[in-house]
Amino acid sequence: MGHGIRIARIFGIDIDLHPSWFIILILIVWSLATNVFPASYAWSTDTYWSVAVVAALMLFLSVLVHELAHSLIAQAQGIKVKSITLFLLGGVSSIEQDASSPGREALMAAAGPFTSLVIGAALWGLGVALHAHEVVSATLLYLGGLNILLAGFNLLPGFPLDGGRVLRAILWARWRDFDRATRGAARVGHVFGYLLIGAGFLLAASYRDTFGGIWLAFIGWVLVQASQASGAQAKLRHDLAGLTVGDIMSAPAAMVPPNITLAAAADRYFVPFGARCLPVDGGNDEFDGLVCIGDLKRASPEQMEHDRVKDVMLPRSDVVTIEPERPATEAVQLMAKKQVNVLAVVKFGRLIGTVDRTAALRSIDRSG
Ligand SMILES: [Zn+2]
Image 1 (tube, protein in one colour):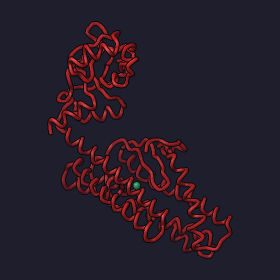
Image 2 (image 1 turned 180 degrees about the vertical axis):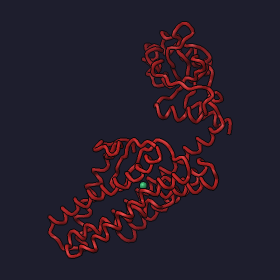
Image 3 (image 1 turned 30 degrees about the horizontal axis):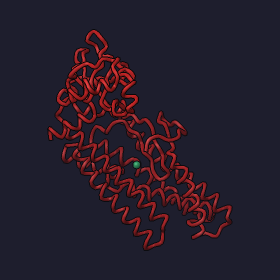
């Protein structure tokens, strides 16, 4: 997923296009112009291609409006939405936090499919009313049907689809445990993902709709991946619940001098102390930065002999700090948000320990 090409900013939300969008756009236009419309209508070649381009672009607008519906409800609940990344048949809203109650979560999730359903019904109705103008009517009916399909697909009760979010809200209200509800809805998402893959192969094999079949199987595969990732994330949050940063941090065994080589740091500090991350001595009992075993592992044998600790350390100005009383989950979130592998645990302005990603995961194993 990730970032794409920024095309607009609507209601303070950045709209990005995923690079795959262009390939899929070409595939859809080609499929509409050479297969879908010629199967039902006798038009000129020019008409097939122009209608195909217009229909594909309107499909894109439909997906955008669907995503905007989620985002506007989120914003109305005071949740910040950073960006929307659009794929042709779907979008991903980068919403910074989860809703504060099951009711609000369900509302936010249902807003997208509801909007698609309304658009679908309106376009379909318009298509029927304008049946005298065959080209216009055919385009509207096709888009109306696709919007209804979009609503139906997104309502499948597997997380992270919209229907899965509604399911999570229901489970959340019942169990009063957000992470358990996420894992439950993600498991259903996993099952639906495999069902879609199976249906895709069946479609390709028995109805000879190779394009549609591969497409469906691909969507299923994306759903399997996404549900797996969300389930794992929820499990991590659950396992860390109740632990504080102080519980999972390690106290620094020594301060590493800034001017020794990486090889010397490994021999004299990391190996003897079995340390993962150590502060770098800045004089006066202050630390100048943090150096981790990962920084040494990335170095070539030559760099190990020549580079000095201060060349590879995370400098103090870039070090992200956290207090020992904070929940351990916050440390994991902070590392992900700031894209660092280590945090300095600081109390009354003094460094009392470090937390790194691997150590955090290891302490979960111990506590579990
Ligand atoms: Zn949606």
